Length: 142
Image 1 (cartoon, rainbow, N blue to C red):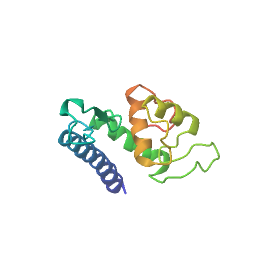
Image 2: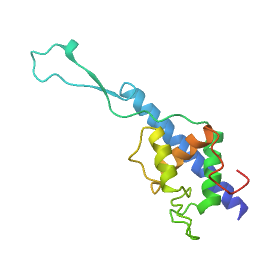
Image 3: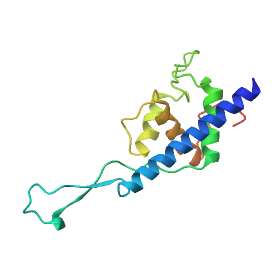
């Protein structure tokens, strides 16, 4: 069972880091995530093109932060996207209180994010850990 847990945590960390690397590579291939608007007709000059960001870039976190996120997820919910069984109101894979999650997601310029979307919850958790916000999780060992 211990090998399975270690393998699961390692797999999550590798998946998240690999996904982030692919996203960064894709952003570089498209000019760091910016699109240049096409001219409306052939008479428009290329100088009139305006760079429009496609989205707010996600912050990059170290592998050790992602490992702590994976550990918290495993201890909080076992990876299950559920509401807290004791009725505390915490939800999702990282057992966030909805109001706490909303406030912290808004700090990342993503007020539309949900604690029910695992990748979004993981990113907010990484943000929280970098800022030293660990008290919201009562589990130990991570």
